Length: 277
Image (cartoon, rainbow, N blue to C red; front, side, top):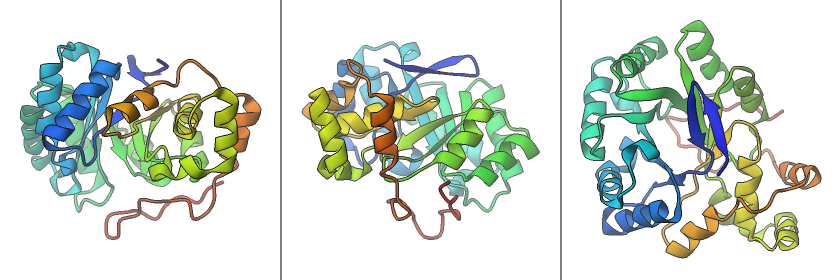
């Protein structure tokens, strides 16, 4: 495993995403992930599966202290008072008394950023969130909460894969000691049909998805949280630590980024995204 250092914590660079994993199938997938060796689990209030995550973790036999658990506050719950109340409900569902990382899911709440950060800080001060951060925030928004407001954010979770450059955001975050968590890391399967990635995968006797994930976690301050339902894909995604990409291969994959590479862009809650450098 590769680890990222942030504010005194060691975060596994490869995590397990749980979006759309619910019910018994979701619990089985999370159980398989933990058995495979994942120790970084990502969920959110919006996923409506925090109870399934909590049940799977509790039944896994893996010590809670050995799992880096992230959840996210939905914008409707981000106001002072409501955030704390809704997060307590999340903790009850997760069967734990703390999250390792608590994020604001989208920068679209009517509550001002200053109010949201104050609420996040309060749960951090109470020991209920070890680290706090944001998700889907632009460079300007991240800069506002970190520098103008002074919130001790540790991370920003955003869409990131070979077809979407996040260079402006990465440059800013690395300069300020934050880490980026990449969702949609294999571009919803698009990497499996890419000839450049396929050629690199063949050279390493790996799959295109494994190469895309290795490309992410091999970058400084970047974590990836692929989602998988089947045991085979769960294990495939985890099997990326016995090879490394060359600098030239890293550059070739980075060169695949394009202006229309974004996949997730929900109307009404998405910000005006940064332009790729």
